[in-house]
Length: 154
Ligand code: ADP
Image (cartoon, rainbow, N blue to C red; front, side):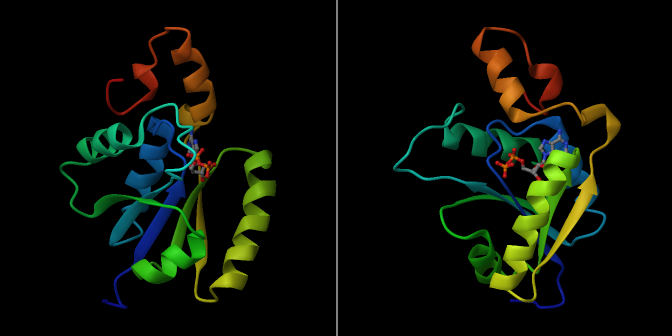
């Protein structure tokens, strides 16, 4: 493991991965040498809207030209995964005060669990601030075209 490398974990559900998420990754690449998109996934629960293997494939395709981005799934503490993968940073997007309230507690806990871990927050670009995976799921479920909000075609 190369300790000088700035590796960031971008954890989330990504159900589905949106242009808002893509924006955070692209901007994160200016700060970090490597970004690992880590999809929290419990194979016992199987409650995803977009099937996990399909989502992994679509994200990988979106970053096909960027070898510094990789995609993994995990079912453990995010801090533990960061430790294991050699990531000293967590990357998260902040859209609004609701995100802030939640992220504040989570990042304090993560640093308690793994002292070296710093969470880096990027404020959402205005164009993508209103995009959320849950709204996209809801709209797509009723047959509307949501491709405008995704970095690939669903
Ligand atoms: P989680 O279930 O962990 O909130 P999400 O997949 O919803 O996972 O989000 C992962 C990360 O991406 C979070 O930091 C979230 O704030 C951020 N994010 C979600 N939507 C956007 C967006 N439209 N623009 C920027 N960041 C976003």
